[in-house]
Length: 176
Figure 1 (cartoon, rainbow, N blue to C red):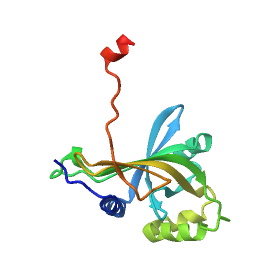
Figure 2 (cartoon, one colour):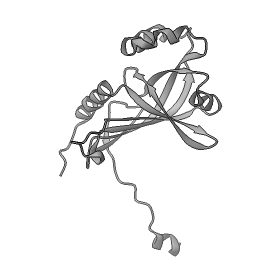
Figure 3 (spheres, rainbow, N blue to C red):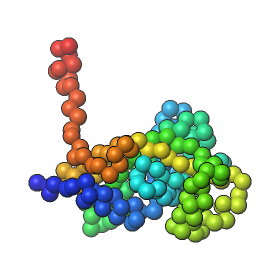
């Protein structure tokens, strides 16, 4: 049986994961279907705000311009000594919007982004790049077997052990 974790334990695990893993999979909608792109990211003060520096020329940016619904997936890298089914992973859902250069937080976000990705400095001079803010509403964080947690943006530091959602069995559906 897995050890019970507190919200503080899960917060610490979340911080460690995003410190260790600098890129994520951004999922956008392309013709109503999921489309994944590998992107560098940073977070605001908690998981409910993530920031990406994206080119307008990229498919994922075009998708966000037509439908801002998105998901960001962050996973611990696999390795021969690891159990791939027990890797730490986090799935976040929300909406994306361009962060205006006039926004009060823009300069601090840019500085934080360049602190993590100094190679991106040149791209800030390109007119087709913009900082995108992901306004994330829900989080699902798996730390391993029996250690799945959910959180909401209204209380981002409160993690609740995931309860299994039981769907009606085929027999139950046929008897309705």
